[in-house]
Image (cartoon, rainbow, N blue to C red; front, top):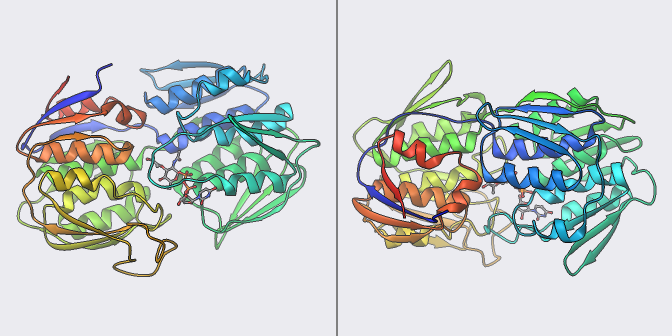
Length: 438
Ligand code: EPU
C-alpha cells in the first residue's frame, strides 16, 4: 500500500459522510468476548486497522473471528480459547496498546497470559504501571521478560479495592475486564467514565456481569462464575466526528456527519460554537459548518470525560490557526501531544509551545519539562508543504492542514491514519477533496 497522499488544498470540504463504531470501544468489546462461554456478536464495526490487529490476536488465542466488513458485523466464538505461542504473539509487538487488556480475560480462562511490547501513538511515555499494579492486586504474578510480560494466576483472582491515581481509561477497562470474573467484590475509585467505558459496562452487563457506577468516579463490580456471549451495537466514534467537524471549520466547509450523536459530543459542541462554528443536531447525525466571518480564539484545556477530550485537541488546533487572536491550549492528559504542531509551523501557522501550565489550573505536567501548553496566534494562511504523519490524531490534523492550505501538499506516513479512520480517502473524495495516493 502506498503511504503517501498528495493533497490539493484550498477548497472547502462539503457533503455528507458516515461514521461507524468507536475505535476505542470496539477493540475493548472484542477483548470482552474472551470472557464469554458462548459466541458474541458486535455490530457497527468499522473497517480500521485496529480491528484487524485485535482480530489477529484473538485468532491466535483460538477465538474464531468472522468479520462481515460491509455489514460491519463481527462474530466472535471463544469456545476453543487456548494459549498462543509467544513467537506468534510477539509478531504483534508494537502494533497497538490493546494486548495489555487481554491479561484479565486470559488469566481467568487459561491461568496465564503473555503480553508483547506495546504500540500505540507516541504522544507521551504511555506507561502501564497502573495496569500491572491492578493485576497484582487481583493476585496475578507479573514477570517482566526481555520480549514482553508473562503473567500467571496461581489461584482464582480475588476482588479487591483499587484506587487510581488518575482516571485512566485503560486502567479502568483493565479493572472491569478482570473484576467481572474475579472472586468477590471489587471497588474502583478514581475511575474513568468515558462513554466508551459506559458502553463496555453495558456489554459486560449483557454477558451477566454485575456492575454499578456510583457518583464520584466509583465503580463496584461483583464477580460472577460464568459469563455468556453478548449481542451489541457499538456506540459511534465521537473522535472521528470531531475530526470531520474540525475539517469543516478549518476549510470553511459544511459537513454532515451521519451517525454522530449529541450526548457524547456536548463538550465538543460547546467549544465548536465558541470558536464560531455552527452545528445542527439531526435525527441521524450532526451537520457542522463554518458560518462565514471570523473564527474566534479561545482558551481550551483538555481533560478526562466529561471534559474536552485530548483526542479532539489536535484536529481543532488546525482550525484555531484560522481564528482571530491568541488561543491558549493546555493539554493535561498527555505530556507530549504537541509534536504535530512542527508541521503546522512549517505551513505558516504561528504556534508557540510552553512547559508552563497556561490558561487555567496547574496539571500533573507543570514544572516537569514537558511542552504541554500551546499558544496559537491567528489567523495565518497555511501554505502547502511536504509533511510526515507523527501519530493517528496528529496525522489527521496534518491532513486537515493540507486541505486548508492552497497548493499541493505531500502527506507521508498516511497508513497510520488507517488505524482509526475508516475509508478516509473515500470520505475525503466524497467531500470534494482533491487527493491522490502516491
Ligand atoms: N497512564 C499512566 N500509567 C498507566 C496508564 C496510563 O501513567 O498505567 C497515564 C498516561 O500516560 C496518560 C494518562 O494516564 O498520561 C491517560 O491515559 P489513559 O490510560 O487514559 O489512556 P489509554 O487508555 O492508553 C485511551 C485511548 C486514547 C485516548 C485516551 C484518553 C484507546 C486504545 N486509546 O488510551 O486514544 O487518548 O484513552 O481518552 O482506547 C487515540 O484514539 O488516538 C488515542 C490515543
